[in-house]
Amino acid sequence: MTLLIYGDRVSGNCLKVKWTAEKLGIPYRWIQTDVRQGETHTPQFLAINPAAKVPTVVLDDGRPLAESNAIILHLAEGSALIPADPYARAKMLEWMFWEQYSHEPYIAVVRFHRHLLGKPAEEIEPRLMERGRRALARMDDQLGSTPFLVGEALTLADVALVAYTRVAHEGGFDLDGYPAVKAWVGRVEAALGIEE
Amino acid sequence: MTLLIYGDRVSGNCLKVKWTAEKLGIPYRWIQTDVRQGETHTPQFLAINPAAKVPTVVLDDGRPLAESNAIILHLAEGSALIPADPYARAKMLEWMFWEQYSHEPYIAVVRFHRHLLGKPAEEIEPRLMERGRRALARMDDQLGSTPFLVGEALTLADVALVAYTRVAHEGGFDLDGYPAVKAWVGRVEAALGIEE
Image 1: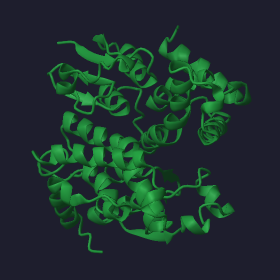
Image 2: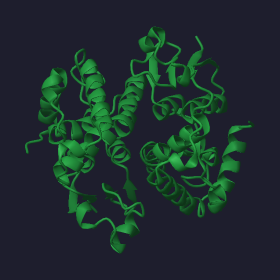
Image 3: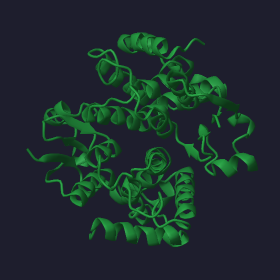
Image 4: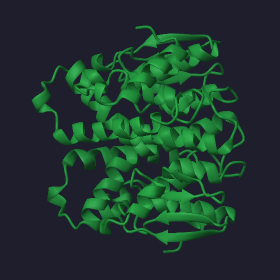
């Protein structure tokens, strides 16, 4: 049985799973699940994930798993996307938890409201923009000294953080102010073979 | 060199690290760092963690690590607090990422505003209470069928989630409505030797 990915193409969290599967050569079937059309609230979907969220995968033994970063950690276990060195692995996890708490709730949420719901800029809380810029500045600091977030090589921290950083402009964030981040987005897209 | 834990005693995120170190018998020194007194913004602290957040640990080789869940995953590597089975480990991570995205921003944030900043209940956004109750209901569902979040044994998912669940009443959440959660809090406190 092939990995089933229930995901919405417009969601960075869902694309993380797609990119990781492709990078690792894991065969998968993408089941497009449109959040804005309520497709995560059908009885069929709720039977797989009662939390009604994508991405959710069904593993080859039929068991479901949710939370984008937990999914990619599971898929990439034992691969070069997870550093063998314990400290480097811990730093990767530090970035991945930071992504969900201090980056996604600003960068992804603002982009969702502006780009996908069509809200005008003046309806976005200034606090969200300020926190988003702070997140980008922190990444720019790190990426000014290392090519990837955890050093010399691509890890899941880059996969997790590129997802919404590469579309941050759709939320009104200008990556020109973060040159190290901008260059890193290109490097990660190339490493993952992201084209669109 | 002993593990240094920079933490604030009133922060559940910080207590996760203390409990994990104690459970595993890791010698540590607690450096009380009062967030409300600005102690995470001193030059000394910023040199260790430019993100100005606790908990931050300094490992025995002198290297710093932040993000509570990344820290406890690092400390507990190879211990019984992390299941050996890959799927159980993935479910543990699913709960830990869910904690930071779908539980802490409601349960811990409301408790911070009410209990630590002294805000009256009517100044709390109803949306935050509703999301917090939804998180407790989801835990109650799971804990109605297994004694711990990932099955029969205590894991880091329980450590991460008990931190703010056990003080949820300080934010105005009534655990009497979630009997399986209430019983689980007692079990986890006993397993971790939490007394206060």
